[in-house]
Image 1 (cartoon, one colour):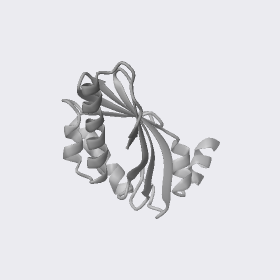
Image 2: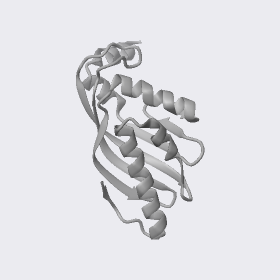
Image 3: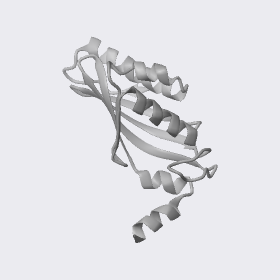
Image 4: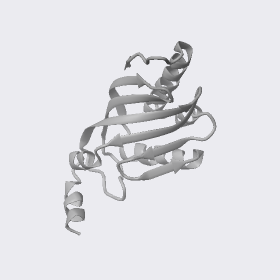
Length: 156
């Protein structure tokens, strides 16, 4: 993972946060979700900005992991670039996967996707408290072959 130097951030704190985010990414790809949950300090929280979904607490976050990895069992990250801010690590990356399971009630298509993601890993001191994800949901849906759904929604 490439990273950018943060100005004014304590080097030890920066390194700690980098390790937390890297562990988070690695454990997600390995589908070791108990390990991923442990990267959060006390209370995991995900905010998916493209859909407005919020997963708050270990049960909701674990259900999110299971649902998304059922739909995309080979989901992974490439081209990860980390940027450090006062209270966040900002990660830019490509998210890739293949739609091999049900996705929001839609049948699997067997098609692959690659979307650009910006994720904000929000910290309070050393503690990861939230992951906030921004991406183009329409691009993902089109790439996996459910673009007709978007057209139908646009007509309503």
